[in-house]
Amino acid sequence: MKSAVKKRLNIWRNRERPTSASSFSLLSRLVGIETEYGLYLGKLKSPELVHNFSAFDIFEKLVPWLKKRLPLASSSRDLNRVFLANGACIGIETSANHRDGGGLIEVATPECRSPLELIAYQTVLDGWMTDSLRELNPDSDARWLKNSSDAQGVTYGQHENYEVRIASGWRLAMWRIGLLVMLPMLGVYRALVAVATILFMACSRPFIARQKSSPNLKSIQGQETNGSLKPPFHSKLEPWVVPLALFLRWIHWPIAGYFHALIWMFAMVPHRRWMGAFLASRSIIEGSGHIDRRGRFWLSARASQINTEIGFGRYWNERPIFITGHWLRNLLADQSWNFEAWRAMFRPKQRIQISIGDSTPNERSQYLRIATTSLVLDLIESGRTQGLPRLKKSLLGLKSLATDESLLRTVIDDRGIPWTALDLQRQFAGAVRLMITQLQVSTPASRIEESKNTLAAWVETLDHLQESDSETHSQKWLLGRVDWFSKRWLMDRSAANASWAVLKKIDLKFHEMDNRGYFKQLIRALDVPQLVNPASLSRASRMPPANSPAIRRSYLIREFADYYGDFSVDWNEVRWTDDQGKSQRAVCS
Image 1 (cartoon, rainbow, N blue to C red):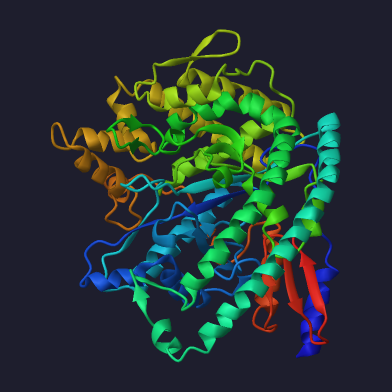
Image 2 (cartoon, rainbow, N blue to C red):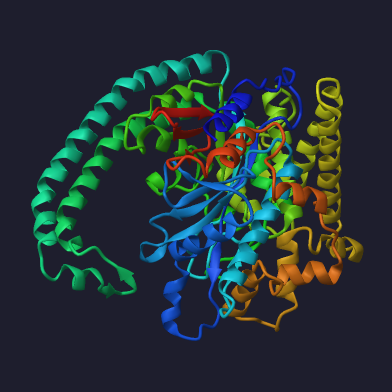
């Protein structure tokens, strides 16, 4: 058995890696989606059953359910996260936004190079989430919501992930120099963390020992308070936990501030300069619609929440368009010093998150969002930015266009020229059309075909939006394809002068994942064709994407996850202890 395991591992290690693509080709970057799901419980037979639907309880049942379908392995960083043999990842996302210290189930697709392939994996994961909830809770009325906020205004939803060239030339050199300057700061930070942890453990040891010797430990340990189990010494340790957390947060700030300044000056400068107009107007083709607490209709739920251009996200309670918080977490969040994470930041290509897109069960909307954004990124990174508009105030333009369902409102660019959202999207689509023509030689035929299909769907959507006020045919075509238009159509056909509660109910039920959801009912009634074919869905449920880091990760999970007891996985590496007791590490990038 041991020799067979070694043989399979050597086969992989000696395998030739695929050759890199030419210097630049269309749709060659890695892309992915992370989705947090809301949960609607419906009617429960007993109020006490609500405790069976915490994110942790659902995850505990979900993992064995998934393991019956394909191999999986635990995450090396988070016990409440698993990686699947098709390359995907499922876990619990916790945040200060989540009520009662709870969390949300989060699903992440594997890294894909084709936007259409990415949507196949997202569709498979959506189906698994729906099926598992129904099969594991047959007596409940619970269902998933794939949206961006609940009725109380708690936000969650979806992040898009793109591999981008964050800098080049002198900016890349300055970025790397800045990272070198950051190294002593990280060393001091790690030393302070070690000292603080030792002091904390020393101070808390007498309290822990006293509680362990208590004769009432067992009875206290089983107590339930306000629906949550608390450790028997929770209240005794709290005075020490809070100062420690505040101290660690305090020593984070100088590093976070320096890193943020470094990012602002040298990282993604062309992307932020040229993508503002595209992202500010993108909601007209992919926004899911949203009723805010004042009853105002937005084309995009996420657009109503954005308040800055680039930032760490919830670290400073920001709502940025471009999120770099995962860069900071990679440097600071691990319990021990992670030199590899720091060294990886020297690479010119990094994963960036865009948080402006809405979460939706509409696969066409998701595809158009990812594919058009990938092409615009190609446009910028290939240097084809001549003639592209730059908004004078991108954030204000975003808010203005996202509240204009007439599509007639204008925003001003840096040359004083007014643009409607349709004008901006057509300008970028025209630039992409020219780019596709110029890069046909350096791009594989399959990617050229997908690029042309994306462009055709993009322009067709804009044409129908242009005619939506007067053409019945365009209105019918948009239903089931553009979410905000479909949701507004449903709201307009509700009772006259409908209350906020009625409109919000439509808003939320539009996103229900099972067949009772309004979107699901709408596409069935209109017979909107499925975007991804069954063969692609079948493959996505079993295998990792082609030409992806997920291939190696998935191979190792299939071969060794059940053989080595301490086998653990992260996005970029796999770790285990071999039969000789030696720690092994395989890089998956």
